Image (cartoon, rainbow, N blue to C red; front, side, top):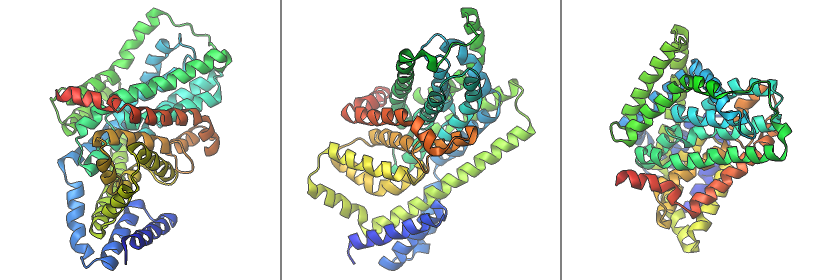
Length: 433
């Protein structure tokens, strides 16, 4: 049986299992076992134990539960609430006023949580009631939150970058560094869109009764210090070479515990809830990574990546055309799968193509993160849409419509970093020097 037929059979089987609501991680294990059992002479059980252990036991994987735990602690403590109070006086003078708190709060929280859903839920729970009370435009409120919430994946530390670095064997430190400039540009683009909309129509963000003074702004600085100090502790220790990402994650957890304690928002219930939330999230990710590692080995035994790479090479497509094809593929995948699944299911095929086309794997990691960000606001499986739906009750498709400008901005960002890859690669090269 030829490789094309085998690929089609496995794809149909995968679609069947996913369509019958079998867990993604379990589906990947089943498809890998089918590939081994029916199309090779290799015993799948002999391979599985070794692959699962190697895929999840590396020292880098220790950073995953630590970063998740840090985000959970921040999510459940007063630190996130104080973030809104601290940012409000500094945003009030801009066109769009407190709408920019959505963007800035998501940017700062993303730099310590690493999770898009946690960023959206934390910031939305605090900002949306305040914005609604001040009669801000609902579409801009929800749309800006949906878009900015995705920054949890792009601005380091990032769970998605960790998984990509582990699966693709790429330096996680370089990925974290590479995400800084694109993250800042994307946050600035989101705020720029709000400025333009509110200059054209000031009624979208009406001025409230509060008139903040410089004295108010100076008094708000202590409220921002915990998040700022955590960012410096976690990212600074990585960039200066003082700590590995795993060690920096441990420092972040200790910092989160300390700040939660001094803000008097840490008790047994909050600690236990954060711990259990971390365990559940980590187990979900680990299951997907283990299943994907097993499937990747099966696909490699079958020669599918090599065959597809050879076929694409015979077409003679340019690197830009290849990126366009992959972008369409990821947009379709994003409508059906979560970000972690997109990474582990596509890399066995995408990685050889990218390498053959001459793209840097660090650059591709950032490109892939942005494509995953897009999947967070595309129905029917956009997690940020579900989070906001849970907060306000609007339909998924209405929230997706509000988020369309953010979607287009992120698409433009993928084009920008493709044309000018130094936007991504400048800081990793600078830090290496």
